[in-house]
Amino acid sequence: MRLYIDSADLKEIAFLNEYYPISGVTTNPSIIVKENRPYLELLTEIRGIIGEEKELFVQVIGDTAEEMVDEAKFINQQISGNVVVKVPVTEEGLKAIKLLSEENIPSLATTIYTSFQALMAAMAGAKYVAPYVNRIDNLTGSGVNVTAEIVELFASYHLSTEVLAASFKNVQQVHDVCLAGAQTATVAPDIIKKFIAFPSTSQDVAVFKKEWQNVYGSDKTNLINSK
Ligand code: G3P
Picture 1 (cartoon, helix red, strand yellow):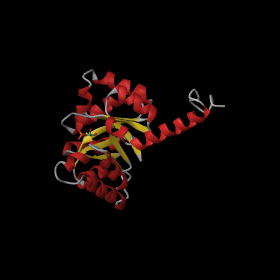
Picture 2 (cartoon, helix red, strand yellow):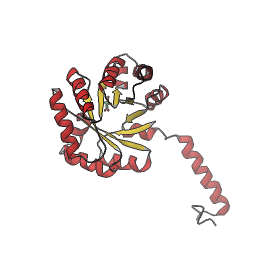
Picture 3 (cartoon, protein in one colour):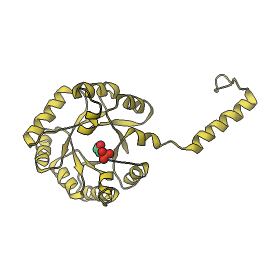
Picture 4 (cartoon, protein in one colour):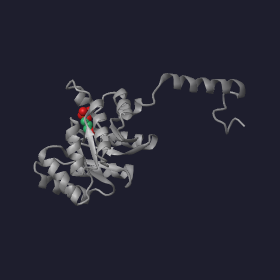
């Protein structure tokens, strides 16, 4: 499984990129406007933090396929390194994905609510599809089931498009899409941190340290100064 940070918060990105096994950063217009600053400058700083290799996802906002393709090319000129263009699965978006694929520009089909939207996007040449798990759940559907269906359809038709599951409100949803076979997921920083937060783990670590210091002395804080 590959994990992406669904945020444009530079502090969070720097922290998670240092501590967690992160493959890149995904943004969308709502995520970018939260930072309230010039977006190209922001994206360039994100690139500076994660380096050139990790994928940085940027979403187009144009209405027509041609506008979306122009935006995709513009973003690829402005932002160095490994960039993936996010395109919504409207009809214009689908056409844009086809045009981008013909020019070998990687795209992610976003705002996916059904497995057939994902199938069309994959057939059009999208590198990734992003089912909106929590938003599907909020419509009394099942984001996990939609993800599982997408995985199954792609396997049946030997499509190389990967699932980048998105829109999560809790760890359980991420856990379930991983079990359903999603190759990748993008998750907000507060939920990523909950992946490993567990009180018993912290308690165990504290007990190990206390037992050690009871025998070797309270000034012995690590193996090196305990020699
Ligand atoms: O990556 C898509 C994602 O940002 C949507 O998430 O939490 O706004 O439903 P959310």
